Amino acid sequence: MEIGIDSFAAILPDPTTGRLPSATERMAELIEEVVVADRVGLDIFGVGEHHRGEFLDSAPTVILAAAAARTSRIRLTSAVTVLSAADPVRVFQEFATLDLISKGRAEVVVGRGSFVEAYPLFGLDTRDYDDLFAEKLDLLRLGETTNVTWEGRFRPPLQGQGVFPRPHQPQLPIWIGVGGTPQSFARAGTLGLPLMVAIIGGSFERFRPLVDLYREAGKLAGHGAETLKVGVHAMGFVGETEAVARDAFFPGWAHLTTNIGRERGWSPPTRQQFEAMAGPEGAFLIGDPKTVAAKMLQASETLGGVSRITFQMSTASLDTAAMKTSIELLGTEVAPIVRATRRA
Image (cartoon, rainbow, N blue to C red; front, top):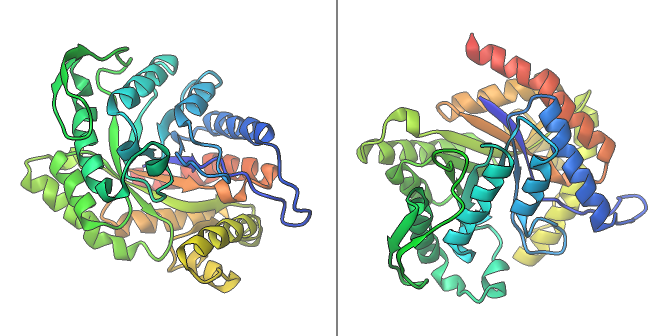
């Protein structure tokens, strides 16, 4: 199992003083987080894409390129690229460039996005939400060919133009990022692309039918089981003790969830809800190293085998020391337990 971290470059106020770090300070800390993850042997680091004031990740490839120059082994990916609101040719070029800078460590996870700010920002209609994604994914996958001939509805046609630069890897890895829509799981399976499932609440069990749908769609389309990889993006944090981990994660999580929930008509989150999701039946991977490792292994078993788990730690970023400790514990204590158990 590959183990890593996803960040939305959240910029959060101190829960006690209300002080908001500068964007420059937060960006520097984010790059240091990637450096620490590389040093302790984690496999992957992803940066999301949002176009909102509380996140600094509107240009993830720029952040990842800066991290590539400071690291040597860790793979670098998006989490996710909002492909529906982007030009697929440009996305390919940016990640191919990242692949050259990182000497073959780039990947791209593409999705439709759980926030819609990118659509009006770039002059797109949210009513075309899914059609945009399907068409643009088709064009992005043609990036394996240097000279592309293609025609669609939302973009001028290509008539054999060259797409450069070419990546360092023979083929740029493309994952599909999904939430809870059955059609998205089935589409990824039919295309034979690896699946990244965002499980940010509830339980892992409720996603098993959707993962089964993905695998069945892939099988019916003639794809081998080895190509139908499943990854999980989950809220996660590691502390020396369970109490330390929960106390470090909760304030930022509550702050962001309250703000987003206000926009979407949700009730304010409570500590009781948080504790339930961090407990044995919930989908939060939060606790001491042994507890987190055990829960990761259980999640993999529940979903029929998982190839990758990435931790969404951004909501704890207001405590930079705790963030770095969490990353170190994930790499030096959690990962060895998980890898040893999987090998056995």
